Length: 349
Image: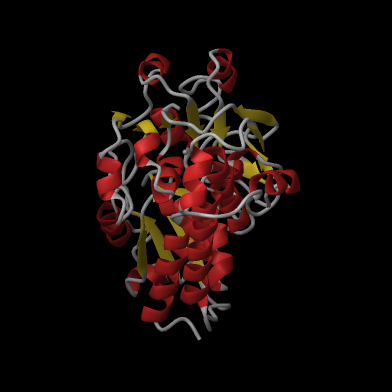
């Protein structure tokens, strides 16, 4: 997620650490078994999360999710009735979760104040980004934990391989894989005592990826991902969620030579790379130029530096939500839409 977005939202991936996988995947079951666990059996339990030992004395009953990514995981796990609030939205909630989401108070469209979160009386706080639960964000993990509120950050943003101190949105020495997202689902399911639901959700997501990419060969196709900003566009580097999408469909990223998460690259360089397909962030926020996909298309088709690009002349655009372009369960949606686009354009063998 581009740094200006992360700043405005205040506080926006990699192989999951083996220790996290071992911690996350304990337990099984669903239905009655999940209900029994959520009532209090099996606690306290500890999750190893990005160098923090997160100890839960009981299953959370008043969780607050500070980013849309973690919110949609909790809603997908059927935990709306155990959520006291959400915040920081870039897109409409994913289809199928509208009713559940409507039942959860929205503390803020962007980042809430620390006091606003505390007013919700949370017993567990989750976030998708280190910048949300860190210095300059809503509050630090330590601030919550001093008050007895355990916290959790998506491992896709804080595990080994992601350098959040390198400037901008950070960089990745190790490419993100969907195992990081699956591990987060397993962690959160374990935290709430609903491991069976977590395993079912992961199986569904894996099935969707397999179905979307079956028989797909796009090895000669180059993709460019544009998140936002028309003057100095944020384009995807090699190794975040767009990288995971690109590898899944077997294509090439036009900017695979940079490890920065969302580098700002000039249009002359884009013209030199001349991607076959442009993947456009279709954002509903209003914080930078060219937020919506239609605004991006208008720019591409009128700007002298871009109107002669192959993808522009042939109108090869794939539209994705902002959440699909960040490490989240909707990265799977990104794989589905890019794969479908490649087939529609006649570029997939």
